[in-house]
Length: 126
Length: 438
Image (cartoon, rainbow over all chains, first blue to last red):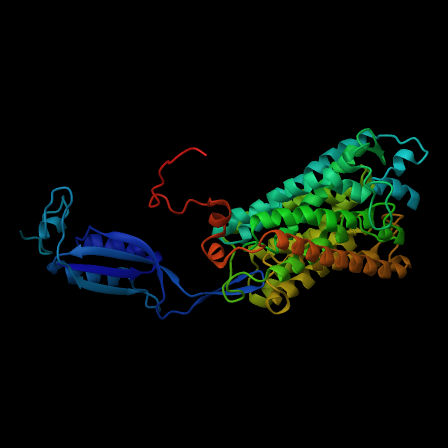
């Protein structure tokens, strides 16, 4: 099991979401975050004050996935989030020790699989 | 109209009541002035909204509360002694007498063609808006109780004497022949210079100039500007103190100058930084309204357009360089009100024409001396505002600290000053629970 964290452009959230759903990944947590990558700062003007905004708004996707889905998730995020410009974001993959579904106390892979989803791997086998 | 008539129109002194002629209340003038007074009242909340939008979200309430506090402070101080100090009989060239403290003996009086109480409330609301404007210099760092005490003293030490100088028949600037139709010196120069001095005395906000407080709600800025513009029509046209042609020209000129200044500010922004901004458009409009205030009843609409354009240009370049020129005058009170007031007062001395108002002869009407008089008026107003503000703040400083601590300032001005927030940002993570009634 891995925890996949992706920081992407807010305007690409829609595309990333669709790509993940198509890959069969539906358990996703989103947060609004801001940060600094390598992109140029934004300059704004307010009544004689020129302001440099040094942190950009981004959206962070987090998902816990079983091994067979890790590469699928990464590919889906890259497909959805890439514009080719500086500032497209980053993906981090970390090992995950335990996952518990609160409703049933299921653990591990059983807790990762969505209720209406029976596929345990991308090929569709049991 | 002779100067003597102006004296009757522009003074709240007992002159009209005891001057020997039978004063008559005019119903049309009275009806118009009741509405004009109500319009001036709306300027203070309008300014609160304008200022509130210009500061960060965590200071919005404290900033707006200062303007609202002015609605209380100046009103009470005016009724108690302010009016008497400004327009009461028995004074001298520098200050009115105290015989009308508490508005004693004014209630059945007649001022010009108006019931004296109407003149009192109209002038009272001028004091309110002027104090509210001053607050823009000190937001985000001045302690609220210190502002309340300062405002009370300021109205009596700076505003009332200046109103006496310029608008009472006993005042020395009035006698000198200063042309100030609606408060270019009394309201604008006074608030601008007072704000600048207050900003100097208090010192800058934390992290100035590197850390900036940028506007948190630009739609509020535009809404406030609209309300100010609307109220300003009553402020300037009402300064005719009568429902007549001069009032009509004043209203037309006020709108013209605001329009020209709005466009010119956007033009300069486009030329210098590429895009016109909403905050810039709003600022330009306010600058135009300020600049036409002293001259609105003396100049032609064409001259009003020129006054708006010139003031907008001067203020734009001062604001663009404010970090090098001024202390931390938070909302640019000096650059926008003070300087535009000075520009407007000077241009009134140049552009006033008897074609509009027989009382106003400027340079173009063959009276170069008027420009000198206007300069004296500006310097006098600035000197009183600077000295009076410094004195008021020193007095307050003896009683209580003027500034918040760094912790209070950084931790959120609204929370530390009022124990409330303008916007519920914590919900639902804050999980508020009921503990007791107040």
